[in-house]
Length: 591
Image (cartoon, rainbow, N blue to C red; front, side, top):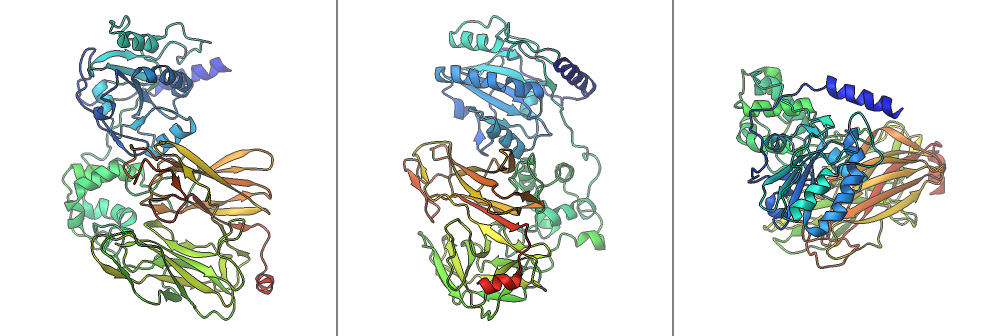
């Protein structure tokens, strides 16, 4: 079977080898690499400055789906363990256009790679080195001169697998460069998957804004980039888009915008903000070729215009708007304690909520808004983590909208408690936030349940660059998971949800390999995830409390759980319904 698979893989490489290099003269042995600048999987820009003290640096080109790369990962980890203490820096570089940034980070986390993994978005770095396959190695000495290029060793090729290598090419080269000896074999033939160099198919297509670009801006940018919303630059007109086109190109090409952090290898999500490769190429080509507006067209020219300049409710026109009872004064600077306001909406009987949305009165200083349901005789947070929450808001995608037949219940006599977290921006101002509610037309068959799955015993060691903590929830009956939302603070760098069934089978539901505190996203499944009674859902968070983390307020501090952002949290929000239909009358009677 192994021979058949290897033969098929070799045929794939031979038949899929149509690629072309741009006119770039690749480095030759002895040439120096003057500079480079690439993002790692924590979205930190890396250059020679970060590795200036290394005695040697080995770049290994990788791909998440190349079989030979995955076979060689244990070897690379072994080389890292042996040579890192001696001053050698091993770096993986992913130049595969088919691998998204989120997938590259997820693959590195799954395989517990202990060395940096960088993403070469436009393949410029691969072209400069002349990389043609994965895995292929380029070894530089302490003077940043290329001293070896080729394979890792001869254990694996596209046609065979040896029990152990006969020629330890990279290991030998590392030992020789550390001993200041000439490299005995400075060049070997790399084998593996061919790097598919891509060219933008929309270059030369004479794209114009009105016909080709306005729809993309409207669908992917205006949710945030218009007046009254969290994007600080408005893209509500062609003129504004052209004005910031170079910035748009950079953040789209580097997959920073639109903000979406789920590894595409796991799950399909109803509210994905990710942009397709085709739309990304189309936008980049239009910018590269001068941002032409085109002839006005009544239909397309207005697609990128928001309906109104002010903030609109994304859930549609609310049936009821509940606001804070007074304006809150926010100082120009300092740390503001959480603010709480309780409002009685006057519900004399149970009401069912089909959709709800929190709306900041002043988005420039509101870090988040959460509206909790304060029911007679019931705590907001149960001992098992079940939480009486109505809706929240933070930069991201958080309105609550439920499918037909599912709704959230607010029992008769309940009040709403606003929790406000403010972050001063240098100017004293005021805020009065609100919540919009749409009621269900008829009582639903099932009630939505929310669990916070928090871990309040956090103790993140000072200076540690990768610290994991988890929290687990056991389903007391068969259920369907609708959405997930991991939440951490400034030191949070990654999160994931793992489902374990009673038979021991495990399934990754969500992986967020590059968590960004600035964007709080709810991940809503296209199809709810069915789970049996007794299934365990575990949320795992990762924190970087080292000086290397530019968001870290204090790397010398052991960090506990806390509400302020200089402390930390692990909240693994999950929305679900039980498979057994709820009876609204019975629920009301019990309440």
